[in-house]
Length: 137
Image 1: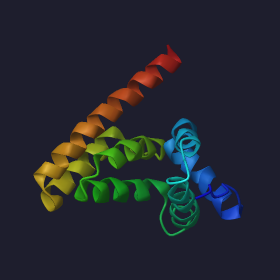
Image 2 (image 1 turned 60 degrees about the horizontal axis):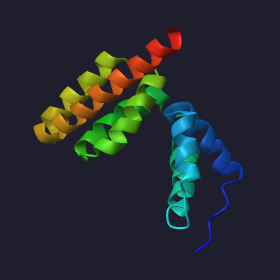
Image 3 (image 1 turned 120 degrees about the vertical axis):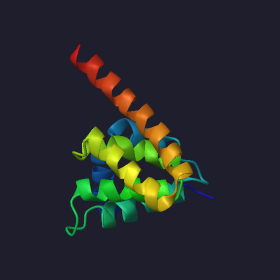
Image 4 (image 1 turned 180 degrees about the vertical axis):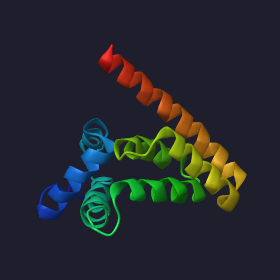
């Protein structure tokens, strides 16, 4: 299998949004690590998730972040929660609002899923706080 080319209008549109939300470091590392097995999924996610859905005008990025945190909690996907906590903060969601999303999800999705999400949320908020302190200090 050969690597798909990471180019094209839809890919570039998605790459821009993906980097703005998740951060250039994470996205660049994900793409650099892509191989013949994982590259097709990276291309698909960048073009369709980020380039098609995240750029639609019907919801702002903050609302999309709220929804992602709730849905990822419902699906019990801590790895993806980790990525989307940073994205939510970049999209203007406050730490308090993130905690409220997880509490709301606990009632409707289950406490075990919410506990996993809250552990990841706390870890990521502490990491982002530390990074910001290092940048300003």
